[in-house]
Length: 165
Image (cartoon, rainbow, N blue to C red; front, side):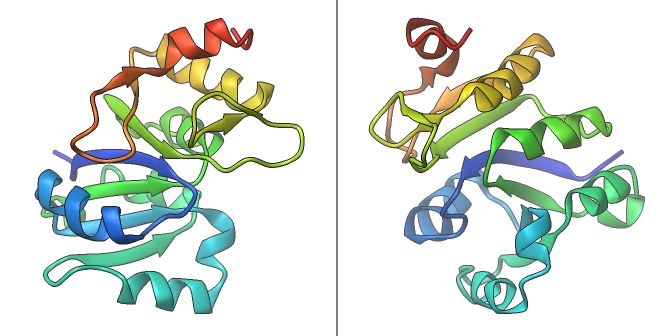
């Protein structure tokens, strides 16, 4: 047995109003694991993220290697977790490391040079699309939903339409 992953979300804003209130309640979690190497080394960001959690939900900010290491550790079986990532590459890495994920919710990926806006909240480049394709090829559902009330939109047809896959 392993921890129970209730939601895997890519949102480069990490913990914000929607995540801290609506997504945590809808997912019925007791733990948010922010999985990111850079953020795990930033003590100020870690402290701010921990303070942003709603009552009853603990936050841990961990590097990718730690997520892979704790996946099969029975000490963490009590976790009903939301895994928060900033990008699809990190999700791909944890899946390659043996972490079992059935679906990924994509909430926000900010625009940066070299990226293309494919929705009003998601910008990708070819490397992002390749990581998403890897996940899809392993049977992982990729759904776009900024907020819980939004309809689920399959990411793959949008990537195809935009010429990424």
